[in-house]
Length: 268
Image 1 (cartoon, rainbow, N blue to C red):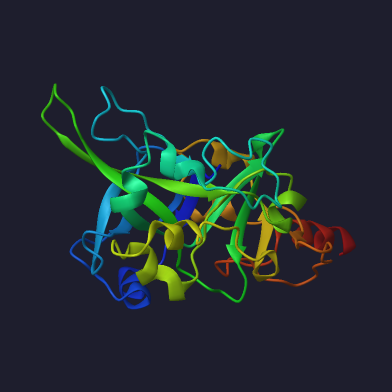
Image 2 (cartoon, rainbow, N blue to C red):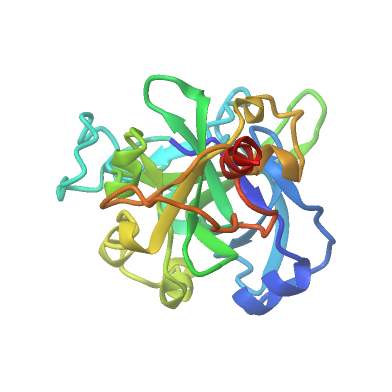
């Protein structure tokens, strides 16, 4: 799954990247979690960046559900095989079949946070695209849910997930968000596109273009929302082999890894 992510790019950078305008100034968020307001671009307004609640509740639900993710395979591939090439069952799931057809969105991010399958966020990693490619977009779906008690209308979204690539397998996680290449942003938001074209985009991103490093387990608490909580605490990971890092700078240019600094201190 993808239950935490990072979005800290400046509004003007996001506007330029996605050729869309924002009517609001959104603050940097180093730990986007369930219920948080975060920027998305919808198929209804592809030229507008708007804030929405992270956690999907379809309009027909009796209560808030806060579903963070929607499986591209639906009920297929329950083993989360990385080589799965079967049907995209999301189109048949009652909660998602309307949204995947008519309520798609780009979920704007800079990186995402994922733990191992066994230890979850007790052993977290920051996962990102190499060469400082950011911001990026996850494939998402959105809806609006009316609270019958308060009369408040909640705009909400979920991130679509897919089988893991080699990098995610290496850090021992069984899912990953669908990361869309920029050339497919318009296609994904185009409601006139055949559904088969949309489902064909719901694939794992090439592992060779990604990297990851361990961060502090303190990120498990949504309250820990600051730059310091996504600093590296160990060496980097690459999909094919471990890379012995001696002077690499982390994703947001926050300095050398703590692991390296500790080694340097011991050598003094």
